[in-house]
Amino acid sequence: MARHMPGSGGPQMRRSNAYGPPQMHRPMPPMAQQALPKKKRYGDKIIHPTIRQLEPDAENYMALLASEQKLDSTLSRKKLDLQEVLKRPIKVKKRLRIYISHTFVEEKHPEKENDEAALPMWELRVEGRLLDDSTTTTAANHRPLPKRKFSSFFKSLVIELDKEMYGPDQHLVEWHRTQNTNETDGFQVKRAGDRPVKCRILLLLDNHPAKFKLHPRLAKVLGIAVETRPKIIEALWQYIKTHSLQDSKERDIINCDLFLQQCFGVNRMRFMEVPPKLQHLLQQIDPLEFHHTIQRPAEGQEQVSTCYDIEVEMEDPVKQSMMAFVHNPVLANDLQMLEQKCYDIIEQINELKTRRDFYARFHAEPIEFIENLMRSQSLDLQKLSDMGGNNVEAERHVEEYLRSEADEGVQRYMFQKVNQKRFELEQSLGIRQN
Image 1 (spheres, rainbow, N blue to C red):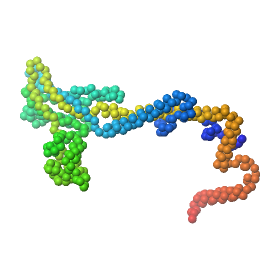
Image 2: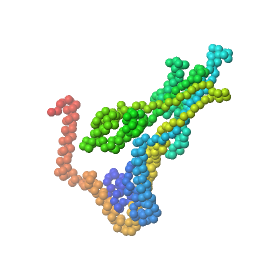
Image 3: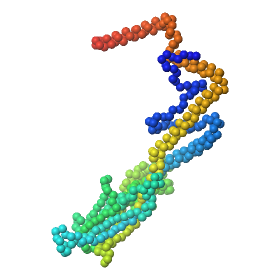
Image 4: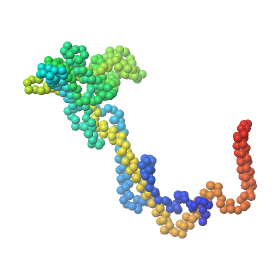
């Protein structure tokens, strides 16, 4: 039987051959469990065929594993489809009801106290709300989405009053969106007066992505009046393909027909020149215009209101659920933790199988198994000793140190030490080496 190396404290390495009993799987420390597991292969979750013969329920696990593989493939494909869908804007049309109302109030003059000092005042309100607000919850977490305020649908608001009545400084009321704008549910304007006042209200919608009004000639050619820039370029490309205006030799050249020549002013152009040329044919969309007359209500009527319904575009709430599914880190971490737990269990089962095989061979042929085990351990220790350059048995005899190789080794060692001391001395004295 081979002897242990001095000072080694016995063999501490893990046995990798068929005769040594494997070490049991040790659970990961708490800090290692928190870290994301390394990616492993699908084959690491497969149970060995021998184990399946010993345990019939293992076949149910293999069937479940096959179903899981199909489900993972389907989810991966659907996730890629959702990522492609999320790259494009998903819009739904909703009806926004706008309420325009006014009331008359009497306010006391700050310097007079009698009844004749009361000043007639009117207050104009512009408010609104969505009629169909049923899609305010997400399907992912069933939590209500924040409701959009009335001002979030518009880019600007202008209320124009009678200029002759209120002068050049008081006849206009303007609101424009900025980066620091606080959203509100409505707008209020208060002025003094009791005579009828005609006012014009202009509301400019805030579209995302931005929409543009086409030049009348281009709108007649494409059949659209207001649309986003990508939709306009797409419609123009469909018109070019329908009328075969693409050059047969140079495919990026467009041969303009009479209608496109009137729009762009050229006979031929490259398709990459279309976006800059469209810049002169697109204008800002017209604002919504409402007319309202402020006058005293009839007897017994406190408030006069008018409502209008318009269509607005909103982000589809389904998109929120899609993003929550695609970019949910909690779900991904939970799946990775369960995958790692499955890998650990299968690894432990495989180690137990190897351990069982070890003892099964010992039970079948104990004497032959012990002899093979001792022979294998002796060969392993001998190989380790040769690889490390250690020959413990030979170093115990004096003949090992009287060989010519030992004399040569001592001379090389002394020569190296002398050169090292010489170099250190020259450095300390500042002698420059050539």
